[in-house]
Image (spheres, rainbow, N blue to C red):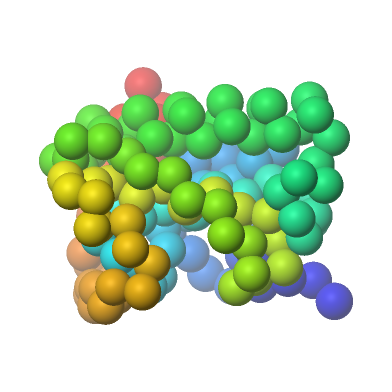
Length: 132
C-alpha cells in the first residue's frame, strides 16, 4: 500500500509543494512546529532513510540543502534545523525546521495551526526562493 507521502507526490492528496525535481519532492508539514517547517522525501518509496543507495542518499541531502537555503531566504530564522526520525510515516523523509533557538526543534512541542492562505503564502515564498 502506498504511503501518504507517495499519495501526495502522485497528486492524490493535496499539499503545499515548495520544490520538486525528478527524484525528490518537498512540501510544508501540515502540523508544523514553526512557520516554514518542510518535509523532503524521495519520490521512490523507501521506508528507512539508510536503506537508500549511497548515491541516492547523497543526492537526497543535496536536494534538502537547496530547499533549506530557500527556507532561509523566505522565513526569518537563524538556521534551518534538520531532523530524521522516520517512525511516523513509512517513507524516508527529512524535516527542515526554521529555528531561532534550539527549543524550536523539539518535536513534542505544540503544533501550529495555520489557515490555508497562510500555508499557501509560506509555500509560495519558499518555492520562489528555491526557483531562483
